[in-house]
Each structure stands twice: as C-alpha cells, then as structure tokens.
Length: 595
Image 1 (cartoon, rainbow, N blue to C red):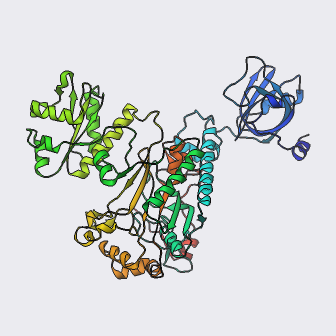
Image 2: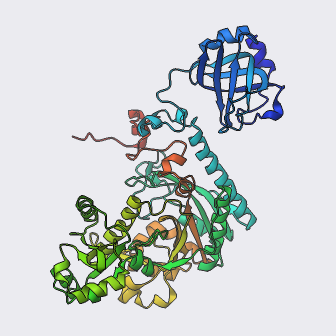
Image 3: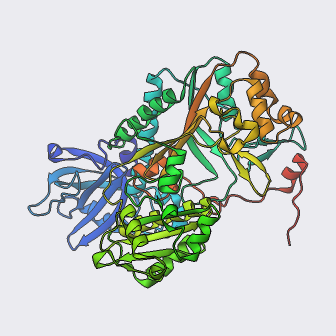
C-alpha cells in the first residue's frame, strides 16, 4: 500500500486552502505533523505545510488500519495522507484558521520521514534562545512566522523588480571578486591561488561598477546586490547583506529621490501597507538641530530646543561655562513624564553617559509651573519663566538639559529622546513614517587619522556653490547626498556622483589621497571618466532593514534565511572554520598561532 500511495497519488491541496467548498471530496495532503492529540477513540493531528494547518482525524470506525498506525506519529514527522473532507462537528470550529470549519478523515497515510524530538517547539508564539534557533535554522524556518518573513521578503523583491523594470531599468550583475578600495569599513579579503600574494576583496557595494555602467551607456541600472563588510555587528548589521542598488544617468537629486519614493511605495504596498507621499525633506542641519541624529525618528515630538541664550547669565556653572566657551546648551520637554523616579533619572543619566555626556540636568514641572530640581536654585524666576515658555512646559512635564560640545549634546539628547520614546511607547500604533535627509557635509574630520574623510564615499559630488570652500574650509562643503529614513532607521542613501576626472582628483587631494595612490586604487575609474562620462546619480536601499521594519521585526536576522550571529559566526554550519594545510600552501599562506 505504501509503495502504491507514493507512486500513484499526488498532493491535491495544501494544508491552508480547504474550506466548506471541498466537503465530500477525497484529498491528498502532505506536510508535517505539528501536534498529535489522542482522545481515546479518535486521534487528531494538526498537519502543517507552508500554506497553513489542517486538522486530520484518525477514526477506528472509518479506517481501522490507519488509526492503529497513527500511534506512531510524533511531532514533526513528515506525512502523506489520503482522506475525506467533512464539516467539523458543531461547536468545534476554529475561526483562527482558514481551514477551521473542516477536517479530513484519514483513510490511509504514510510516514515519509520520521523526526527526532525537535530541540524546541515550532509554534510561532514560543520563545526560543536565538543561538538554538540559528543552530537548527532549518527547523526554525518551519515556524509560520519565519515563513511569513521569507514570503514578505520575496514579495518585496518581486515588487522592486517589477517597478524598476517598468521604469526602463536593466538588471545587471557586478563582480563579487574585485579589488580592495577604501569605502569606510574593512574588506573581506580572498587570496588568489593563481596570483600568489595578491588578494581579491568582496564588494562592500557595487559603487564603482555601477558608475562604470553609466559610462558604458546603460543609463538605468539596478541590482538586488549582495554586499560584504567586515565590521562590528548589531541587530541591523550582518557581514553579508543585501541592497537594492540603482543608478541613473542625466539626472539630478529630485529625479533619484522621486524614483526611489515610487520604488519604496511599491514595496510597501506589496507588504499590505501604505506610504504617504510626497515624503517630507529635512536638511542635515535641520535634522541635527531638531533631533540630534542624522536618521531622525519623526513619529513623535521631544525635539531639541536651543536655550543657550537663556542660560548664559544664570548662576548654574555648567551652563554658564558652556555658553562662555561657545558650546551648546539644548533641552527637550518630556511631556507628562514627571512621574519618572529618581532611580529612573539615575538610569537615564548613566544612559547618556555612554554617548559622552558628563551628566544629565533635569527639572520637573509642578503646579504653577514651579521647578523641582537640584538645579532650580541656580535659576531666577525670570530665567525659569523664559525657559518654560520656550519649551512649552506644563504641569507634569520634565525638562532635560545637555551642555557640552555640539557633538556630545546632539548625540546624547538625540539618543535620550529615543530611549524616552521606548519607555513611554510613544511610537506604538503609529504608521510608517518616512523622511529624506539632504545636504550632508561632504567631509568630516577624523581626529585619530588627523585628516578629512568622506562622510559617505569619495565619489560623491560636492554642491557647486560650495566648491570655493573645498580648499579653505572643507568642513563647510555640502554634498549632493540624500538619505531615506523610515521610523528612525536609515533604509537608503545615495548621491549625485562626480563625473569628471578633474573633480575626482580634486576630491582625492582633499582626502589626502595622492596621485600615485589614486592611480593604483582607482586608475580604472579615473580613466573611464575621461571618455565622455555622463552626469549620474543613484541610491542603495538596505533591503534587509526595510523588510525587517515592514515585518515588524527588531532584527534583520529575522528576515534572512541563514544569518550570522552578532559575532559573525554561523551556528548551523560552524563557519568560519579552519581549512586544510594543503589549501593554505596552495595560496602561499600560513596561519600564525596566537597566544
């Protein structure tokens, strides 16, 4: 019977589609036994495949042989069965399932693959240690929640391809094995057997190749590209990740940004959500002044307000000295948050300390707008009134202050507003909220390296009106760059590129990259720019991060089939691992022992 069943019968339905319309039909189902319930005479099994769950019944009166054999079934056994669809008995419907009004009475079945006892239950609501999940990722992927994440990722990728194809883009693949170039993070290096002593680098992005495609006249390119960066990891970083990469010729910033909005809207729609358009825009300067960070979460208030002009003549030494040195004093109003305990405030003080703040001054607003704070005695009634007015203070609020160099004040208060939002659930139930951030600085000073470095990458075009400052005041030169931010996370960034050799060499000089180094590392690009390179620009969307947000997941590992841990390891395969000595000898390498 078993052999005939396998060779002659094919699956007729998935486990997620049977309804009352199929009552009375014979069906063949295949999937995994999710759970078995023995009710004395009847045995119930929830059969699961990627489409859903169907309850199947083994009844000794209907199929004695199958019922006797059903006692063998255990969790996650792979099964095939044939049976009759019938209406569930009155009062036994499950309105949480599409198949919740029917069940299948099994006539005969076969165990296609027995299973060991799984290391964790596969129901989607069960909490499991992540390392265990990654060690048995092939089991974790059977969980409905994980499958839905992969399905969403697939739908997002198809929506992206469909939209870009409709806009005249060509999908072009670029090399994985290329040469090492400075792009901000460490490269993964691949030794060459044929050129011993030389190394390929895995691409951090297809940046240079997509620019060469523009020189080649492709005009509109895209790729769902795999990228690699050897950097410290966190919830939204992986050593290998995916971006939707695109580039366009003969465009300006608005062209790229408008195209990107349409692309992201198509992806969001495929996820069953909506994207308000047009997306509002902030300059980098506005984002830093109001939110302290260049990827601002604009779903809630708590904006940073400058109060330096109000506190410079107060008796509070910390503020007075900061103003005298030309530093920054900013505050934010925690509306209705005055109930924070002293322990809460101590915790928040420690929190901002991790971002360089030497402390956290606070004021609770009591009845009559009276200040309650250790620093209240240093401020006159006039000072208090002016600060209350500027911050819109009301009874029950708490005011937080930061005073230091601008970088520390912005970073610490910017992170504080996010922490307060988390604690008070200020974004709960809020819709997807996008914004553009534009006009980034072209360069930033690296005090350790004691030189200017590119804020994005060294191929970003400077704003034409700022070019005279490139030699005299590089920090004030703005880039023709733009980032797309969703719910406080940067999901994409791009720029208008440099398209002439003279300008590219000029920027290399500002970065301290001499002619010889530029020729060695970027000679092929510099040469290409002498052959009628068109003006061009583009953008890369962080695909993993975008899908994670749309899926409501806190980590991109939840939307990647086989991710690495935060230490860059794969518990499933054991990567990275040691290799055979013969392989090393072929490459001309040896591994030094570490103490």
